Length: 146
Length: 166
Image (cartoon, rainbow over all chains, first blue to last red; front, side, top):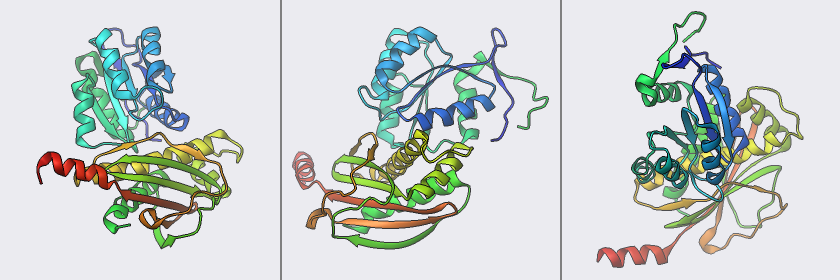
């Protein structure tokens, strides 16, 4: 997999910490592999919206990558609940269902961006940089083949 | 079943497989299935409800499933690995999600349900209004079968037409 210039937290230069939420173990592993190539760190994982909320409280990640179609509680509802209690939460919806209503609903409830599956690493990388804004910094690409 | 419903699934499967396997696919035979569905190997089912309802099954023989999953995972997986079945479920999820996105742009509204592993050897028979279409995709890892049985939800369409006064 392609290696990208690491995205670090501006405040302390530490790796960006991610919470990955998807009911598919395969999808979580796939995202985790991409995060690794971005120089990030997995703070936690969840397989449904309910667990995502408790994992957010426990891990306080910099970014949440959240699927939409999940059992028990869907991603848009979980995103809304997380943002209600953590207004600064940065949630990126990652779903194969990318029609406009879904995207608008997610953004209205507090998600910051939307990435359609199958996820392209280069697209996710750019979205992460955009969502982090000034709180993220791309490390000097020494040794990275971005 | 009308081709306008099938084409988005073909396009989505073609795109998802080509991206995941890093090689183009060839779309093989398209057949109507009247007999009860018989599972070929590792199969995942995704149900759809809304203006159009039914289900889509992605089905791969066990060896192909291992090859496809290994390709998607980026490392060799044993046949027994749960990740093989997980990958087939996620493959079905991505195909349906992308197809539904295209159909939504045409004005249809849906709810997609989480994928389930299809474990029974035989599924329900198709009926006149939910005839199944089977499409074979030839990939570099082997044949991937997609079995689609969808029908228009006429009641929902009538309700919406009544609400809009058409």
